[in-house]
Image (cartoon, rainbow, N blue to C red; front, side):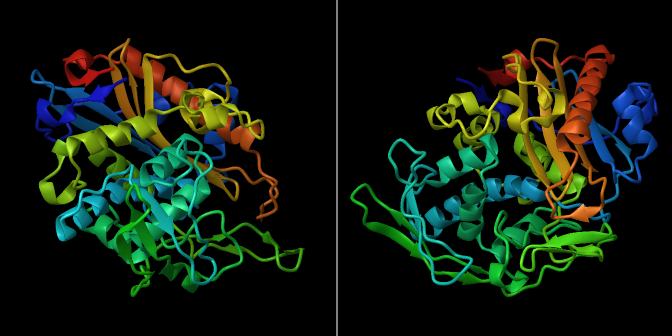
Length: 418
């Protein structure tokens, strides 16, 4: 069992210290065949990378230095399941607000049920993957991180509501050109349908309602300015079972830039780097519960070990470093991250630490692998190009971090307890 001790150890000052100016291409092996293929065709692959070094002072206070490649906060890519990460963080904050408002003691283990009034809403009164067979926010959050479960995220989205989700993130100075406006893995519905979310109830041990939250209807459109939301040369239309030869319009879909993804994660890993108004309103136990959810691997859950539908190896949703191998992740390497993959776009945003080699860094990247330029046809080069590229990129940055000179090393023993 581990426990992160970020809260009492330091106040973080964010700054860029004196660093030798480098580009990402100075750091990675440009002659590696797969890296060369993608970097030399980076426009085709819509490649964006954000690598943030962490440097400590004598007191252990970190500062950040970011090196980017083609990063563009208004260049559209489909974020897929990466939207689940900030939603999960906010679920804990909303619990705290409900407790304060109504004098309750709700936590992530309390039973939560979802009613349904109209599609795409569906009801949820049980959870076969939980030992109690009852749903809870904590288990939903575990599932959305450990295997990127779509239904689990949708339940969190429905608990939060669209306006709360977006307005809260903007208030924390996170969402500059980003928005979360729909469920995932649910097709055939218009944007307006996702403005309506379910009635939600929390139940006590006798299954009596502690509190009922009415269904919500978003009052805002959460429009953001983006470039290139028209993708490819065609798309498969599920309703007509045909390929339509015109660009696929993603202008009404979710979007989170790499900068905003890292900013969201950074507020959880290093909350004291931000003024109180920009942090998630969580207590130390809740931060540690989130760390546990993000660090969990499929082998930590019996219901996944018994599921033969997928091969849930350690790197199943850990694309950087381990995405292309089924080997176990060594105990000394910890990856707190969220991946997304859909419509040929692969994205990962991660905080990676190697406690054996005193290494820690943030790494985020996205790329499109859709050779035929037809969207929604299920024909993408995830296994051939996308995941191996992200894995190799992660390995090379990790190796560089091990070799990188630091004035002061991070003392993991004083910051973490495993």
